[in-house]
Image 1: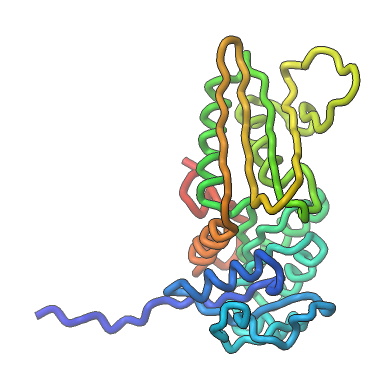
Image 2: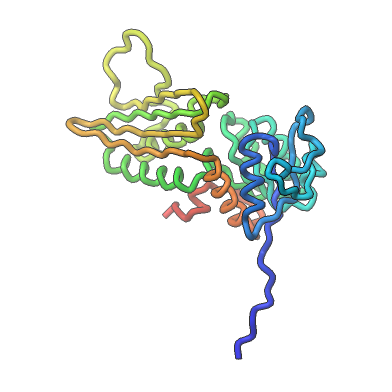
Length: 277
């Protein structure tokens, strides 16, 4: 007779940065709802009014984890930190994670080239998943864009339009920029040389080698992205619309699981989802 398994399911200990923010709370909710992740820490800035409170109090189901501004305390016992904050805060967390050997999932956007280089360097010592968008759907969309751009390298004008809530502080969004990078690379172009971020006045005819960006801000829009391929006699629009931040949290937990057992390296969501083939 086959004996029942006595193995204990893997539990991933996860700390959340920006625990009092909209995304932080969504991540906490996702961790608590998962069957294989445990909330081990919750971090926020020293000025946050939520310091000292239970990280899940907003859900009415206390998690027994107090929100803290102390990095060492917040990372204590964490295998992975999920960070959707701001570049300066993420870099501070990165240094602490590197010192303590804690893996990191980075959903923050707006990094400079120098800041990206620091993250790359830290990946020599710890495992990191970094992506401008953790949504599974967005990353599938990026794969579709790659396929479309390879099939239509000439004869199509490309415009990227993104819409976000009024509180977003960077533009274009990191996701829109990633879409532009994927399309440009597939067409053998350099986005830094062909991107157009604003048009005003008498601009002349559109340069067919450019990739245009438009950013809209308003209301509580979670995130809409459309890439338009406009050719002669036809248009192709590839669109992703997010109606909840939970899709970013679900993707982040997939990244957490992917990092289990990995000691170092810088990975993308394409790695997590097996889309690099």
